[in-house]
Image 1 (cartoon, one colour):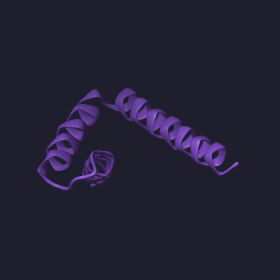
Image 2 (image 1 turned 45 degrees about the horizontal axis):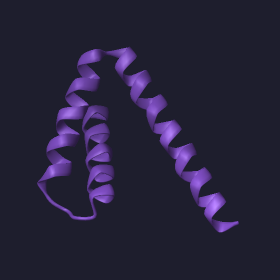
Image 3 (image 1 turned 30 degrees about the horizontal axis):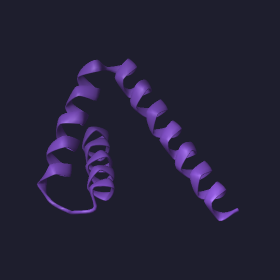
Image 4 (image 1 turned 90 degrees about the vertical axis):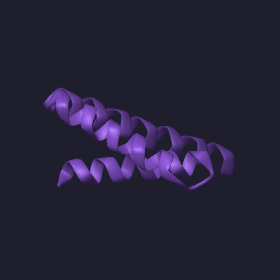
Length: 67
């Protein structure tokens, strides 16, 4: 179940950055979640770390743009 949530989140982010909806985000999200879960615990840790880094980076950009 968590694997499906990871894939959906990744696909959503890809579609948002693309600006257009479509199948691309769903396909890449599915592929990414398969790779991450095949790597096991290190893959989940790496994916979580990357997600936190992107979150902090985006938050910092928004804060600097508002100033």
